[in-house]
Amino acid sequence: MQMWTAVIPVKRLGVAKTRLRGAVPADRHPELALAMVRDTAAAVLAAASVAELLVVTDDPQVGAAVRELGARVVADPGGGLNAAMRFGADETAGLSVHRAVLAGDLPALRPEQLDEALSRVSGRAFVPDAAGIGTVLLAAPARWALQPRFGGPSAAAHAESGAALLRGDWPGLRQDVDTAADLEAVLGLGAGERTCGLLRELGRATACAPAA
Image (tube, rainbow, N blue to C red; front, side):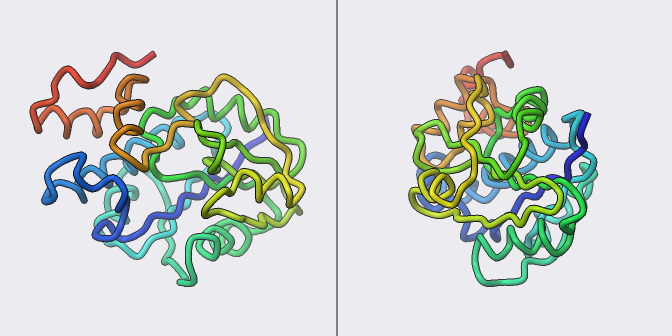
């Protein structure tokens, strides 16, 4: 099995997931963002094909939480999302290893879905989000530059840049969380324990489906 270094960029919690605001009380919004990051990181670290997880962030709370799970934290260099991804993948991990960058809001991710997706990579490749517009994963094998084009209709941008589209039945990998409707979708898939635990605290005990 080919081993990969995974990279997840995470904004400061105070400015993260702005389109999701209102899904939970305002004072609990940073907790929801952190819970999703922790569930995503835990699933990535549990994947058999992942040798290391790098989290690129300037948020000390995020850093402490993911270090506890076993991730390595590096400071965000500034310059936006794509710059953070390039820094984590191409500079920190280095071109000598296989690298995959992922969204940090995949709380229904299953390790075996990530393993299967990565097993299909033969060159630079990507997995679109559930809507087919954004990107949840961009993989660059050793000696390939990452060339991230996240933001807006990034699936089309990655395809136009020459990255191969990876297809598979990976609902937890493809369902990121940008809106309240997305949150309901991941809860239906069976979100991770931290995301579900927070929502139970908020009186939504029946919202989380059993893990598939």
